[in-house]
Image (cartoon, rainbow, N blue to C red):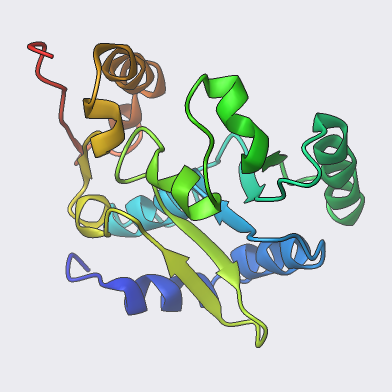
Length: 193
């Protein structure tokens, strides 16, 4: 299974009825530039590569979108409530990436894909959504090589300065992914920044 490519990842997701139902629910909101990202995709890949028979629980299902015309956080909460009314067992989290730069104290993002490219780890910088024909689309701004080779590395954006490098290192320690997925290789940022 180590020979996993983008088509294989898409196929794996399309065969997972739980994931497909979540994607259908998110699509029903008809949000601009929407994706389900991060752990939703990454954990599925790592579970497969670790030959797990059961899905590893994820803390949240990250639905992102980009709408610079409506940056009120209250709108995101209303959208979360709408998704909870469809399935309250899913730990929904909805964020408008047009305002998230304010929370993360970074320059504004130009799109959801731009925001995904600035996630801390390359293996987490992944997103999926359904197209008009309900086919799974996969976005991986830094490629899939790291996630399918079980490598946890910082995105170039988090290598650029000491502040973001520290955030990456803190996050790696807090997540402790190796306790769940033992075959992971964690890469640290050189302290010479």
